[in-house]
Length: 477
Image (spheres, one colour):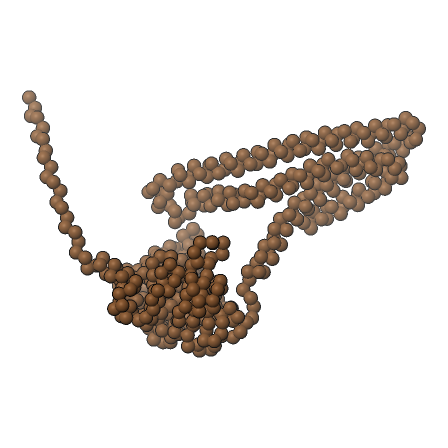
């Protein structure tokens, strides 16, 4: 915009000079000069507005096309592309999207050609009228031949300057439309920004209480993810959240971590409402191993140290965190140890298995040293032996005074928890120690029995296949 602004100023200086000359020569010439340029101004502004509207209408389409293109070449999609034959499907859709995008560009080009033709015809008529007026003044003796020659030069110079001015003002206008979008994004970002400051949280809180908490994700009008939930999380213990898919477990811990604020109700740390607390200080106390934690394309060392970027890198803390997560074998097997790049799309990069990544994710959370550790399905990619080891380490963290909020579908692992909250369709239906919930015969006991049955139920007898009667082939001759 600075570049376009400079060109606008230069064109205006030239235009003022030419207009001054024409005004001195004859007052009728200046309005005719403006009339010659109005068509190009209309044409340029019309086409700029069309391009802007087309961009907004097609921006999602363009993003989807780029996504399909990237899916065709990303390593994670390669197995299904090859085995399931997905490549042809993606190519067909990519080609179809490219053709529709090309059709839109052709539509804009046709409109631009038509608008330009109208503007050119209008400019031609205005130019003929201007020179006809100049000729009439010359024939009528109202203007000398030498003055007419000067007027022709001034008209051509002024017309060129005015055309340049229109083009540059149009470019400036088009950029300003997008800058307006950017300004609206700034305004919305400021509204969504985490507020700075707030009340201090208790140094050593005894519990966190959810009081009649209701939450609905932005833009969703269906049933709330949490509905009037009231529960207590005692600190320094292992608290498990269980329930079927969609019951609200992950939503609850996102609210606990301050990623969202409740629609109704409040979350209280002893007597301090989290909505009025310093959100940045609250986040400092949380460490999280999410179900979909980020696999950063950095070295193994950085992937662990990202747990606490505000602190200087400490090798001792790094080694302790890796040991707490049981990830020593993972690091030892890497070609360059902690300095191995974990991104196969770079030269020398290395890829980890799901279970290895999960151990690094736990090490990242351990490196953070948050007083509350939120673990969402920590053993989803681990085998039975590794799962037992992880839960033993989680138990050790709780024994050392750290609070662990555990989400898992493997209810046999919940026996390590001190307190279990059972959620169903966004509502709290049961709370208590695991043994009491099993004895009560509620939803927890039902889900536990369903899982246990998979291991205790004898396999169904296999019916042997019916004998195959073969017809002997006829003998030769």
